[in-house]
Length: 138
Image (tube, rainbow, N blue to C red; front, side, top):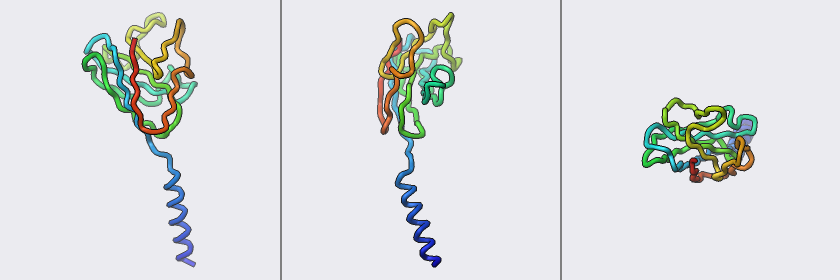
């Protein structure tokens, strides 16, 4: 009886382990920083509710040759919106004056809104496995 119980536990653990969700990594190349000062901050939004309010994951890298390459590890595959901005003054915030960006910014899919704030859906990318994207900042 004891051996049947152990076999059941081992089989259950193997089954659960085989369907476990795995982390994925997105390598983001951000281009067109204004200068070589400061950092490039990559921010990831996992939901429409958090979009442009509170990022779910971030990565900061120094600016080199007016760009940067950041690696962001996401807890599971899914749909995400990524932004990259040139944090030239290294204050960790996206600076705006009267809702006008003071730092260069770009979004996944190189989506850039025409008048008004960006929308969540156009910049969603489907991250199924490790991948690389390029974001052109403006």
